[in-house]
Length: 278
Image (cartoon, rainbow, N blue to C red):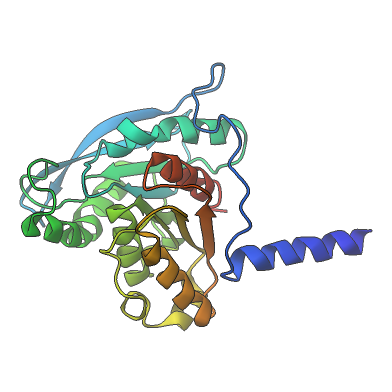
């Protein structure tokens, strides 16, 4: 009996991390609903000096229940889409609710979550023509702002762990593309990378990951998820296919009847957050 259980467990691990599409199991009912009687984390606004942009920039930060605890924390950098800003996750995804529930259930490592504005330009509001070339280019510029300005600010001002194994990056849509581009392009900085419904800003697979062997050796988790009714699913498909062809372990989660919306992205955050820093 013991041997049978071990074989089943080994098979499940192989399926999840070999790059095959993950057998879909829905997130539990109520995972994103406010629960009474559990400890609650806190969301604050921070302001950091961006030498990249030349202004002070804002971000939101989630600190878990009991913070500060005298301990140090790992950090997840959580990115928004092309039409949003640092408040998009808060307004549409209730990340603090999802994270509080995970912690209350003992399913997540206590962590700090930083939600920045991924449009690195002086006027970084999500107004006007969000597809304007200057605004789109600002999403690529954010890589420099993130690495040179925001991460150093967080690591100087908050009790966080500063090694790559304790840094994760994930995002939705445009932020999913950023997360794959920046995470896989800076494996010395991030060990945990997730893209939810990643947008066309995602680099072509061979450019995204030119050295698959290095990724195999350094990544703790590479996560790709998308709704099966999402018109942008081809971005996730081509990335997963390339990873599979090159033997790079990753999770590929497809949500049935999933659109390009927060139903899918909430699921992505729930599943990704409970999988990292372990």
